[in-house]
Image (tube, one colour):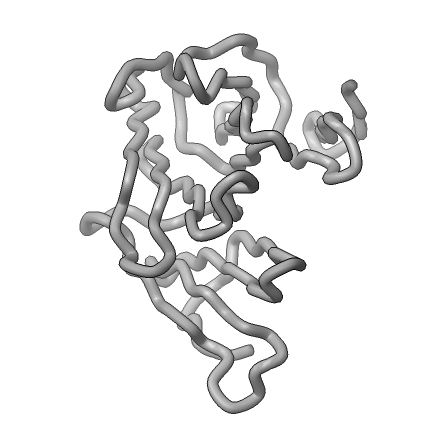
Length: 170
């Protein structure tokens, strides 16, 4: 698949819809249909404002027509795939979820939503990991890890601290 003009920082695959999403330092999030050899690129979505670069992207497990995207400058958003519009915006840089939350000190490097859609995990360039309650939109727990992802077969968290130690939480 070709289309980005710079480094790809994040990819996610949705197996039931056979769709792939990618975030690139070229400032775009792109939605792909990998098996479509004619025109695999379904949509290209620009960052919501100038200067923001998407750093992490994933499908919202409870709403496969939405993407969760993290950007530089400590922001994140939920994007509607069909329209490309930002449905909900988070600003972690000033300590607020634009509708109420606590901040990361630096930019968000990774996001994941648990398979049931109850929790959002955000990882930051400051080395911190935060678990958010999606319904109440509050931070439940903060720790210092660099990489995260939910395993699809159970509620677990994979984490790499300083890229040396792999930890699995249940």
